[in-house]
Length: 191
Image 1: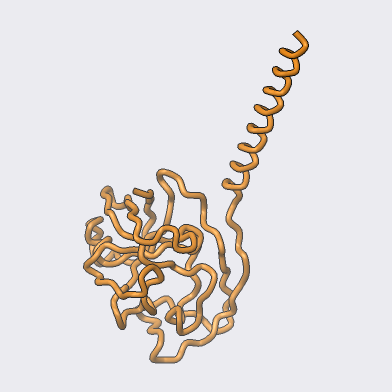
Image 2 (image 1 turned 30 degrees about the vertical axis):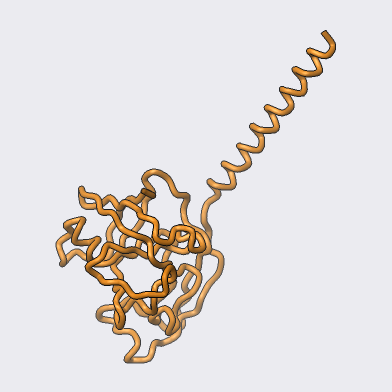
């Protein structure tokens, strides 16, 4: 009888330890994403950022930076923005996943730093839900939430921490009228 009580106590202790560990992990994952720093904007050279078509950094303005993004779920809320992934476009340099440029006719995206997860989502597909439709796109780049306002980032501010930066092909697949391209609320999920 004594061995049975000891065994039951050990099992209860192990079970409580597992529950405590699970709660700790869930609390860490649910931790809100707060700014990790700031960048002071610099004036872009005239030929580097067109304020009529691009979101250019403003001299002296302070921009928040993030190393995290909101937690990913089956329907993660995000802001869809438009990016030019082609050579010479406003997307800056080559894509982080493969060091290549991509056609804007191909459904590709760049994710905010936290969601990009240090290259772990490279060449994986996500589904974007917006405008009553869905579109499937491959992750090829990071929308850098930690840096900006320099030539590597097209003299544009750091990305917000909840951005899915998409090619024209994604906007077309969602059947968003061209006049409305730029920014809209969406949901996304890993495939």
